[in-house]
Amino acid sequence: MVLNNNIPIEVAYETIVTKMRNYFRSAGMKKAVLGLSGGIDSAVVMAIACEALGRENVHGLLMPSQFSTLHSVSDAVDLANNLKIKYTVVPIEKIYNRFMRELFSFFEIGKWSVAQENLQARIRGTILMTYSNRFDALLLNTSNKSELFVGYGTLYGDLCGAMMVIADLYKLQVYEMANYINSSFGNVIPASTIQKIPSAELRPGQKDIDSLPPYDLLDPIIYSLNEETKSAEEVIAEGADRAIVERIISLNRTYSFKMAQIPPVITVTDKPVVPEYKCI
Image (cartoon, rainbow, N blue to C red; front, top):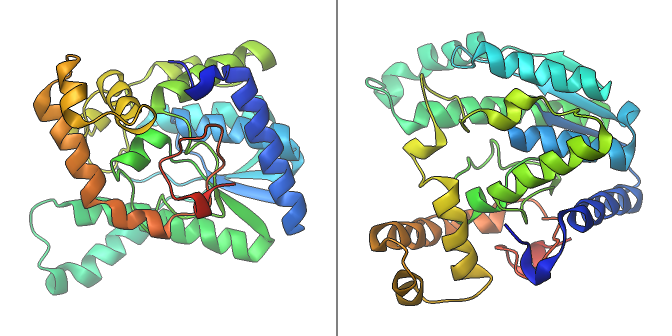
């Protein structure tokens, strides 16, 4: 997938590295922290941070729950070892279970709901922000442009941070950047991270496609709507499924309130999905 204005992925990489480095310098900060999930987004952000800030200034927190797969944990550890960064494992299962016990009657929690998924994200966000406060480290957000456009993220959870590093890259472009990083720096991102089916791992067997259209359908539609400013009818006339297009637009409108509360976004295009005042 080509970036807006045909910006090559290596230029996008250098732009993000430079803007992150400058942001930290202007803030008088040196250290960064982020959550390592074993997924592609956090892997790319971690590799970028090591280049921009130096690996000695970057710390990863692995926060597995009972829903985290063993391969995701091992992928996160392998990434940290490949990049030679320090990391800490903070399991959240006991914290989550305590919340559930205390809140069961109040929230009438019975069958599974998205509230339980978001609770896990917010526990992780709290741990990350506590580390940030305690050790004077800015929290790097790992959400991408595809997720942001359709509101696929938890306020005060995985949407928190001091800056959104890859929020002007579509999911397919994140994979492209991962391959560029590996070709340039020696396969630091595990192959299994790149090959696995994307999942937030907030419930058993969860996959992104349970909540969203596949990214190879989602990204081109968002690109047409956002970068090319086409109408829904124009996108449909070009062959996109009407139900999918209308659903994407509905998600964007429904979750637009999140845009006012997200961190600043590092931009690499002139068509980010956030207001101008949110752009770095």
